[in-house]
Image 1 (tube, rainbow, N blue to C red):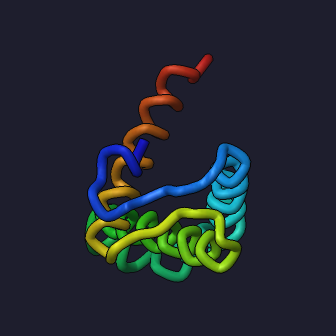
Image 2: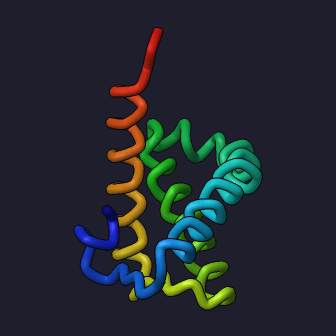
Image 3: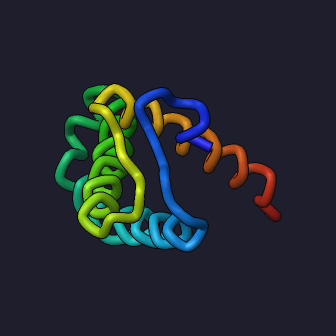
Length: 103
């Protein structure tokens, strides 16, 4: 979704590569993101949570770098495209979480 909306994010690969990229993003979010959030907790408080967008962009950037190293076909032209892509991913995740919440 983010690749279709954000200029500067490109994907040229198969659906298997896309599934691998999703697994990489999930692993980065499961293992790296909590550590980064703990270390940057004062900055997150100072910015009233807006720094979380930068953290999300950093996690997407890391995913893109791993994807490029594995030649999976995901690329970005720079930080601006990565930040906007992270915002789109965050919004879609938030919306899907709201639709599937069964409390």
